[in-house]
Image (cartoon, rainbow, N blue to C red; front, side, top):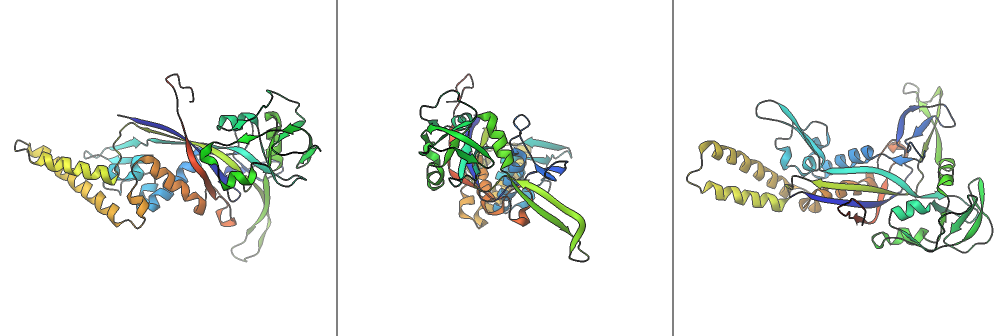
Length: 357
């Protein structure tokens, strides 16, 4: 029976994050970052997150070869939890190569709360739509209001500047986070949130991105190359983002230690059948050897928690937690890319019509 589950993670950048568009462009910044095509708001693509999470999970499981595009060096990729979770390519007995899709979908991380400097100190800007879509509740907020006004989560009468932009204050509103995300990070910002209209959010974000200047170094001289000065932008530190992870385990055959032990017992029982055909016995012997190798590998792992991976979401979360140490995206040697999980993921349920519950 297939197992379907959708989780919404809240993430916080602990460093600036730079996911490049892959080239230089004309404009104020040479090296730009990936944006949502409709709103032009920066994002972290799911492909970048997927690749980093898979790579870190493979290292934790001590099978770095499981991180690549081809898993030919892995004798039994179907018994490797990283390959099972993210997909793998396997060479069949007849010499043909067959691709097996993963059962995890990692979607783009979208900005939820964006840090901006103001005369009142650092504030986090968001919109009603983004917060409500993520499961936050907002007290008594009108459907629409003037574009040049904002709502705050603290008392203030005077106009408030957001970077270069000064806006009138319409009043105070209370915002509550889902219980799974309450904690130190939420407590630190909950009284410093500014709600703006969606049409204004894009301008505020793009005018407040972190921009740095670097220069290429000539390896022969160790000095700066002439004419090699360039600028690049990044999502700033302390930005909150949401990311969907969907598990569609259509195989329901995850190689956890418990499952491997059960399969081994089932094979032992089949060997007791006196009428077992020789070809079938040979196949079971190969399967038994593969399971034993997988169990031996799990027992030898240095990280205790990895030994207890019980489903594909454990693999994803293990890799995701490593983003807090190793990061995602470019400019890692310049101190960019680290991201932390905030609280626990929120499970999103759907009814038969596909509506979120």
